[in-house]
Image (cartoon, rainbow, N blue to C red):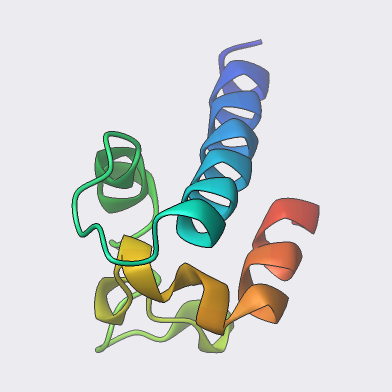
Length: 76
């Protein structure tokens, strides 16, 4: 059950970050970005490139530039 809650929270974060990026592309700080740092950066980073994705190289402002990455993340 805890993994379901984490997954649901992660999906909500991805959706809210994508919506945020579309409306506020210039802003760098988003309250949900910390969740990505906590749960995703360990594997999806510049050194490991798990799934050929490095979230630590992205910013909330750059989300709109890579919609395929976020669609794939949400589907996973």
